[in-house]
Length: 244
Image (cartoon, rainbow, N blue to C red; front, top):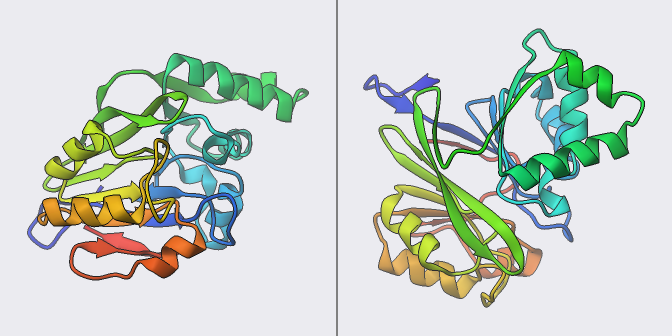
């Protein structure tokens, strides 16, 4: 837990990835306070190592949904975590997600899965509201095409910070925008559809909720070229660090 100069809780967000699958940028993933990871997409372990961050230090992993570009690196986290001094790992998802994670680990490392499973003290948490350190966390059901369930997360301390995960424009996104001081949000298209937010949605939200700062992610190159950091919209790059 970090603290600001006034003694309040301060969140450090490392943008491990800000892209979608089809660009050079890493797949969307975020590290909070060096130990809370949101999504574990393909290549995220290597991305952390490039930033001189050890995957062993991860204590909590929150999954937004179970498309491959959001969880395919989880077997590698398990392997690294099993070699760390602290073997406790909390995973936040739904019950179907737990099954998918276990199947993926067995597929990736069939001769190691039982050994690592006995070593790690992994706890799966399905609650919609829970606490991580001094953060009160709310899991929010969002709409992401045909994949169900898909979630966003809201962290509350001195400030309220949200992560939409992949989502279209829906009531839950409006709720998060109206609630949060900062919202890290999907922006996968020039024009939003029933699966992802677009630039049009982000600009509308930024206008309707000027007190919220929107940090866009899951960005393809054409969207990155069509947005710029100004007013209450931030367009980060991989490795950007945001202290709130």
